[in-house]
Image (cartoon, rainbow, N blue to C red; front, side, top):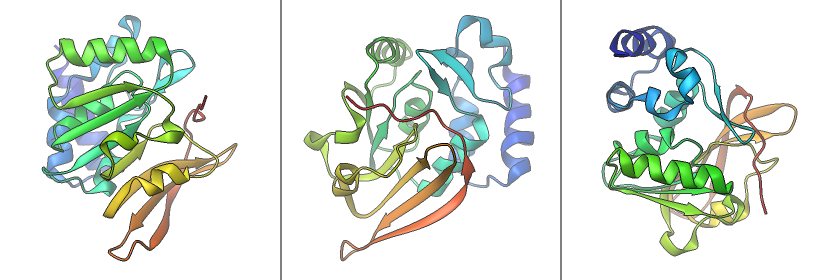
Length: 207
């Protein structure tokens, strides 16, 4: 039903802006974004904008999601930690790129809805956890990749600690002004940070 809109999104918003990773493009193409937005927003599921999902949270603009996934360079064998399940859309995309996904949501209503939606859509390699993203999820650490879907003022140390050697973490960081930051941990455990581009995400919520 939304194939034309999805194809236009892939061509104009993603490829047209430089997204090249074939696996990311395939994941975006095969994931039904319309299943992860509010009923009234289904007609604009593939619009070039973030959309409200209630509880003061949003589903991010498709290009930004694709850009973050491309910068993470996710492999089939990876375990990925997502902070901020939201509607479940990004977890669904991640499930097509990695072996195992752990996604954390602090807002109870979103946790319940996201978990139910992902189960109903048949995603098997995603564990949805209710908890505080600032703490991460020690039980399944370390993680090859970590992605934050909301903006802390600084990258939480717990998440850096739970990042595997040769791991990558991507996050919007800041308050009024935010930047997308890519953090890498090398074989010696040394951390390097790269500033990527200005962004605007909802603030990260902690307990």
